[in-house]
Image (cartoon, rainbow, N blue to C red; front, side, top):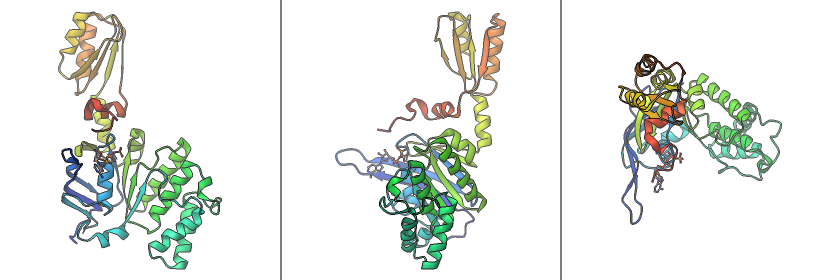
Length: 320
Ligand SMILES: Nc1ncnc2c1ncn2[C@@H]1O[C@H](COP(=O)(O)OP(=O)(O)OP(=O)(O)O)[C@@H](O)[C@H]1O
């Protein structure tokens, strides 16, 4: 163990997979990441970016090919036994729940796996059921639950060992907005308890609302790491100017301005210019006004669109 105040620390973490008859697939490439206690850290990336691979390495179920990762100073490979009690992992979806058993029995079963004594297991089960709002349904079979309820039970399961680091892989996928909102409240509580939360999500609004830091991952590499505040600043670089009455010459002139990332012509005389640099939208507006155009509006793209700028045009497609 090394002395570190960090809850999660990965350096040059790399993992490749050998696929028969194909070149090795690099799922993670020299990834650095750190998460402080009490921090909610978002992991954003398209399908196949390497997020689940990272979560699996941190939770000791997959070995890295090279590089290092530590949980509260313990190495996930050489000190896996010390790491395991410190982490709780919640994968989205429905796997891992005993459908015919009640949530109460599911939780007691996992508590026993974690080595909790009977009395402690009972107390922890009841407080977690309360916490995730399942006390009333505590004795109903899990198979009668909605998806959101199952996700909440997953979270309770992840918390049964009172972990210091909670890894949530797509926890709100498929949840209705009300359940997702309640789930977010639970994440806020974990932060207040000074737990570190690593949250994988495709949902920009969720990342923006919940996370202290957000790491964008693409093709196994860290593209950028931002705080939601700087995400906000980043958004301000990306502006969209829409104008009517613009001829081809003027459109070409706008396209050539520094910081103009893209110009589109959805209609004959309509121009939509996307900027990706501070001050660029001002230059576009100036050029349009100087040419006598008055039909002009501006707006900011969504975080999702900014994200697409960052990772290129593959968007949420599955990596090949
Ligand atoms: N066991 C495996 N064998 C071969 N390739 C794998 C294996 N596990 C993952 N990969 C590949 O590694 C890459 C990263 O996968 P990973 O599941 O970590 O991505 P992800 O970011 O979690 O994606 P998603 O958002 O779809 O869950 C992908 O190209 C995937 O096909």
